Amino acid sequence: MFNRAAARVPLQLGEDGVPTIGSDGDALDGVVATALGAMLDGTWGRLKACRNCRWAFYDYSPPRKATWCSMQLCGNRAKTRAYRSRRKLHDRHQDR
Image (cartoon, rainbow, N blue to C red; front, side):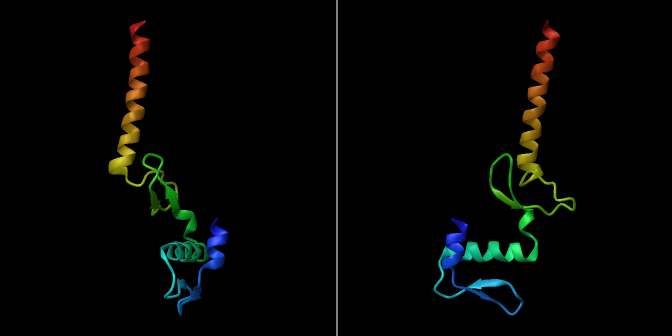
């Protein structure tokens, strides 16, 4: 699907070498141009999907190992869920 969309996009290279779309492009063309630009400049690998909410986010962490869009929201929710699950398992074993 991406290749088909890329083939029909009226891409132009700007003066800075970043792909842009022509004036007759639609929203999908803009997404394709942005994706191609990210692939060319090496930032594509930092675009990820959050494990919790599945929204896309840009990984700014130096080791490129972020797994949540936000530690305050999704990271906290995931860690709280894991803690409660471990606690429930621990409590079951204590009841025996």
